[in-house]
Image (cartoon, rainbow, N blue to C red; front, top):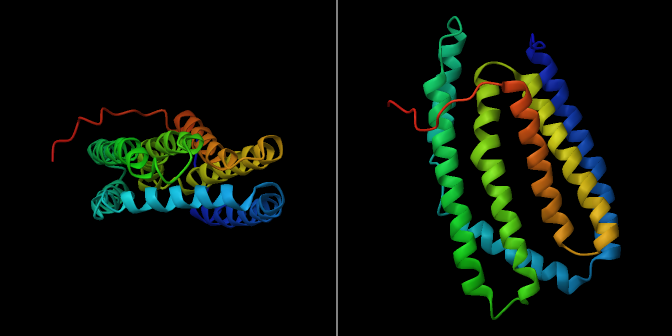
Length: 211
């Protein structure tokens, strides 16, 4: 399928922003009306701790450097960039998997006496989100960018955000629980993954890294 001009990627980017703000407004209204303050406090405590642990798993810009080099090669007559694609996938999967495992091990041990156990399931849902978003979708999105498929990359963001916010808002109404937020986030990334896999249709072995 022929990709749309790069300007369409910018258009989809702005559309993504508009959709994000529209859903965010509905989310804030429902959140303040349906979620108890104490429950939201536990959620924010968990997110803060998981964010702090994430600081120990940076890519140090290596993934961005690989993506830039791959884009330069592809622009010179569409040269093969499978090695760059494989390297991105390998780095993304390795870092996100280590991060997810660290969350599952460290968070319950540290917060078990501070947060009710009923909220610990949020850690596992966030671990799924981390691997899907950072481990796979990040590499697929970078591959689309390297090959100049900016419109497809932008649509992926719209698909993921629309599913995320729709599921989140629906579950907030049904469950009246902060689990709705992370379930929505994870479902949004799963939807983005299916979209990317449907349009990329080009797979590489992440172990195929020669340099």
